[in-house]
Length: 239
Ligand SMILES: Cc1cc2nc3c(=O)[nH]c(=O)nc-3n(C[C@H](O)[C@H](O)[C@H](O)COP(=O)(O)OP(=O)(O)OC[C@H]3O[C@@H](n4cnc5c(N)ncnc54)[C@H](O)[C@@H]3O)c2cc1C
Image (cartoon, rainbow, N blue to C red; front, top):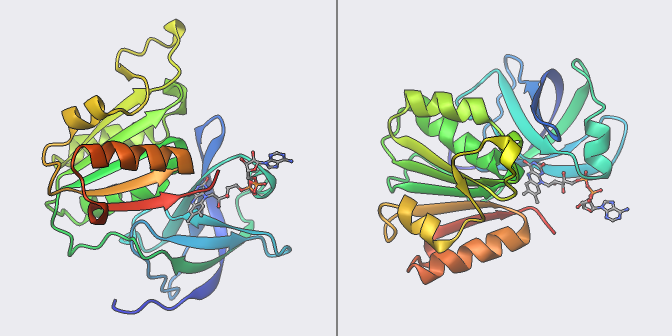
């Protein structure tokens, strides 16, 4: 696939998965004959058939999955409130793919994925793609969530780690409380956490996704560790 054509597809919701209290995955069917080519870490503009209101959503499933595509969405405002009222068998219109900072199998470096909250969505597409294609890149996910209950894809991550020896991940909880029984790492992503978890700082490729402040802070942490700008690919989702 050298050149991507932007196309519009009307796709049926076939499953809605509750990931956390305010994050859901919407799975849309890509029926036989609907060739939708995208790379991991790309997004589509999504709208409802009866409205012009549209928003950008990263695809969280792998492009190797030919019969469906997933978007994983955090409920925040106008579009997402309407989306969360959608039901199985409703339709959504997807226009895309968009985004140049995607992952391809030509990338042979170790890959470090850093995200906060729902920002894990496009990174999950990379994780699933590498796992399903059996790619040899070492993949490290460094992920921060507010509480243990806010860890999106908690079970999927455990399963993928069991199946793919090239994948590993670390979660840090930013708002721990005693009743959560969390024995893992706490606090924000800082340079110690990065140093402890990145094996080959100089030669890895970094994919970052989250709100603007999160991405800005993470870039400056990486730069102080010696990472160069051209090693970093970011996805910023706004304020
Ligand atoms: C390339 C790209 C990929 C993206 N991928 C994803 C993804 O995979 N998953 C995902 O969840 N999001 C993703 N986003 C974000 C997504 O496009 C939307 O911006 C997001 O879902 C919010 O849309 P909304 O209409 O629900 O919120 P909006 O109504 O647009 O609200 C946006 C912000 O304004 C605040 N706000 C809304 N109304 C008010 C008000 N009256 N007063 C004060 N504040 C208000 C909201 O709290 C929120 O913080 C992506 C964005 C980009 C650019």
